[in-house]
Image (tube, rainbow, N blue to C red; front, side, top):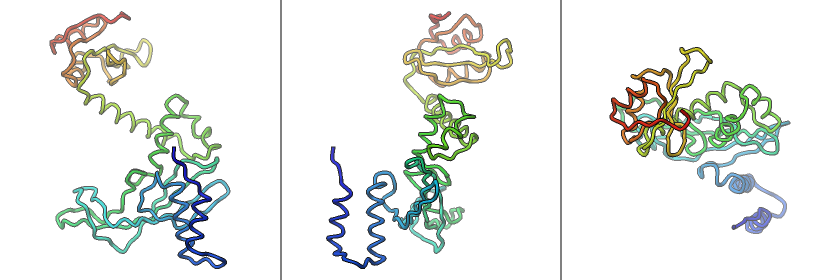
Length: 274
């Protein structure tokens, strides 16, 4: 594993610049950029230029400027090189450092779409690879929050994360989990390798049939595919139609699931649980 020593880089930099006493603004800017490349070179876009680092009582503030000369229009996806004279700051919270909250403020240029027929107003440089457009949290911080929240109690997570330097609300955590769940479900519905489909019903309230849901599981990998509200034949048929590669439907003795499987001409078996 190749390692890079910061002290050696600084010595080579100072020796190259032949700095004795006086350091100019250009040298300070280049030194900041070297620190940025050392700490964030693999996680921030290469066209970001570090302007300043500030330390508060419990927070770090990194100020960057995007030197990108082109960006894709969010609507027509055409690459635009028409820069405007306006700059837009965008602040994103990132992974904490030593229990302190980290904020990155990126000064981004604005662009005008090239095709005159595109109705999009001037748009800003997206933080591709670091954060979603308009997001207040970095992509890697979102991934960490989702992994920590899934096996935990959401109501207690905000207070539990504060000592580690992560400032987030309960509503934000719920939105992140729902958004990630929607992505997983969309991927599951698009799968073309489901051969055995397990289906069963579950009530969110015991004895209350109005809360009945149908649970669909990949019988080979035992991975949950989707949970839908309702336990009727029509609902089961609509869901089973998403996976035309299914050969076997494993079910209980419920008539609705049996009729749905028969409508799709699937081989039916009773699962070991039932």
